[in-house]
Image 1 (cartoon, rainbow, N blue to C red):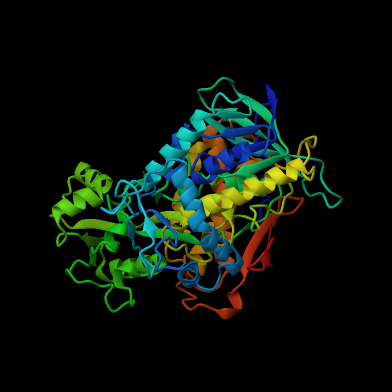
Image 2: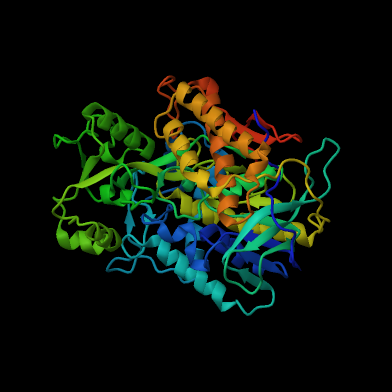
Length: 564
């Protein structure tokens, strides 16, 4: 096996700034962390690849799950989450999520988010797959993420002139800065980040931001795959950057494929239109080519079964019928209701020539959410001192083997508040101090951006919704050859720039994903092995991985609960 790079080749920093805490990302997790931190520390730096409003949160359609109905309870929410997670959730983390969730949603309301309400003024609650209660709050019908992003960005813009908070937009974190290695050669505490200004900003090129703590809130790994619902910025940066800095990652094999993504042909690439699970929550059916509701009889909750069940059943149905898609049927629902409840989806389908109230909608599974990421405890602390991770970039243990619908936005809220409190307290108490960064030893070669389609095809073929040992073994070998080629071939001295850094991160994330999926010889949640179709009780453990001092990927079994 070829060693992983320990840093990315980049120009020497041309400028330096100092802050207390760096927050990387501007979705619900990153913005909430930044706002909470500013109430507790003197200096906060927010770094985002695009504009503040361009985080992954803005694409969320469904809503936020929380036990807000008087007849609902956190215990019922916990039970639904544990069932969806198929025995791999951290019960401690889920309990934190469901008990602190309602308060976190109410704080979001106080920060200006405007959710849909009924005639009595109470929040309108709906239901999605895997939930046994109506507990999903939403905004604008199907524009929840956009509304949350608007409210949080507005809050941050209001304090933009505060000298204690700085925002750098159009910037990518290339690597984390680390202090001197320990006696075993592992990187020392995280003490900042190297940042590249992509195109617009007050600074140019690569600089160094020194900090006592860094919070990674960079979203998921969608661009590892050929097609995804994720934005173009989701290139696995958090996972890859954290891994290079010495942090452990976990549950990387668990990828949620959304069952109902608009089918646009075999050659469709990039971010594809998502048709929210809430559409099925409001009564839409899934049909095969013969017009049959194939989910009825397959699972007691039919179309509202957990997403891994629905996605797997769709894949099996397409295979049996030799079809490229199945169909979502909304024709029995009222046109006025559909336009009012799902205005964004209605408009998106109209752009593709489909009338939601009249046409069958061709759908197929596509990559949607990553349950794995940088391994953290209940306060967002990674295994590397000074590094926190929250949101989709983290593995808190909340999702286990399969995320329950609409728990992701709630996770971002709850654990952002916890991470902010912990990091601020650690800075105030002197537990996190400013260390002097040193250059990490090891490979730093880049993979050219021209390789990205090949890497995505390898991941799609080897680690798609249904996997097997032969396909995964082949994917691991092919990815290893790509890494080896660009580590050793002097002709491939790639110019350091954004597309190459992103592609190298994609290769790293795909490599860890395929190796973890090959090791786990069972089927569970978002990891389905055709050659090991049963769930094995012996595998009710968390697979974690980290790089050893030589850059070799080492896997270990980690407990489900990491505690405080």
